Length: 427
Image 1 (tube, one colour):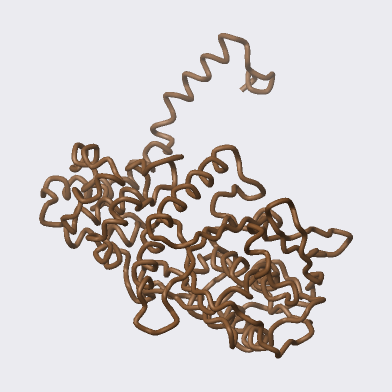
Image 2 (cartoon, rainbow, N blue to C red):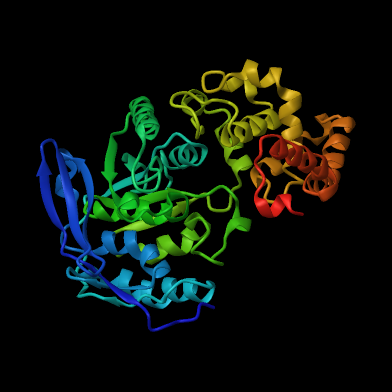
């Protein structure tokens, strides 16, 4: 449990306001970190969605900044009201749970007016569209929801930090973000659903790690458009229930406890749901494998500006799972299948390694159980031997025995060029 101290500071979130910037509309609030450090935090959408921005509540800004406040020992004061259900659950559920299971998080106190009246909603149902496995699975599952009123009406592409490098996006990140958005637009057009795009400076404002705060960042975008939604489905991480954790939340991906976080941010007019929380990545890919849209638009790459590179961690993991399911050839539009097959032995060795390396990719290790009969015995033996001798290998090359000849050579070099100090020469 985190030890509470009296060293907390105060973060003040100003009343949100709406500004028009040509064909885009911004929801802005000034964030005062104390000592005259005031920074504008904004979310920006197309003008046609400006009417759905929620300026009468601080909900979006409070949630977007909560993780930062808890990790940096801030209490929060909001000028505009916070929805009663959200404030109650933050105070009694989310914050106490995170603090109890953390060694560093502060039990942030929230001082804000309370709003009990429901926010009017346009009744839309949305989910994100990144074209990744989790995203496409959520879309496929919710396109025709058997529960009336919960079928998808909108797809969303939020630029809230995924392509940022701490304080700002570099040139490559900008091109990646633009390519990803254009790819999402093409996919949305194929699905026949509108794509809502939102941009924000949330992650760059305070240099947060998007890999940790991504659920908070997406909730910031969702709650900024609180007037639009009746329900919103957030794609699960793909680890199954084994991935659920609230331990040391200052360091882990917030998707590991998304069920708690989304429940605490739901209101009487907005249902926030985790899609397929119990499914693993292998199970999700199995569900998508026969869907033509996934075969065409699946994009998981974290390295290339453009189509999947086929060699990064996410590409390799996905290809190996497709290989295990016997569905490789169906995804020729999304991946270079010929390249993968040409290097299949190396890829299977990498898959096997994930069962041994500390912190290996759990999702790939799951696929190994389906491919183990195709990995030759000598490949397994080679991997086992390498992991067995690796500690001794590194220890030898750091040892005095290995380095002594190089030290002797360096002494002769310094003597020849006169690079010795007086003290060294007198020894």
